[in-house]
Image 1 (tube, rainbow, N blue to C red):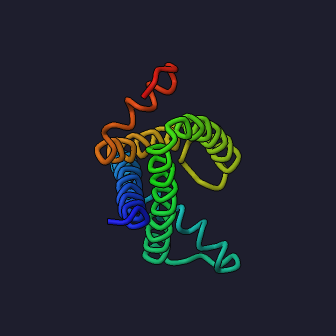
Image 2: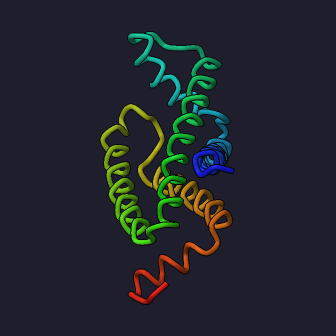
Length: 163
């Protein structure tokens, strides 16, 4: 299998895993509040109103639209993650740069969630942070299985030892 096909397969798989992990997390939170699917409907309504010039989509359209958007975005994120991991196979130190970028992204996302909290109802920055950690962990575990030698190579690079 070519490297491009492998990256695409891994990226889409990792993205679907991450998107599903977040969907399950928010489904659990919604269920504990007795409002199943409240989060994707609320986010879909917010997203839909951007594209519908202020009109509000139906609950079904909001849920479906957000779900498609959520999974598509995560497939793109997964592909980027797969690209980084496959690049790190050749240059292990590139993974260290990715780790720094991940931290910056998380801090930025928490800040963005805090700013937008008024429009997103009951979603808190902590819920989003935990969701991102769950998705990152699930995607990372998948990629670890696909590239079992990489963690040791990156660790050796950090320690300054020869590979």
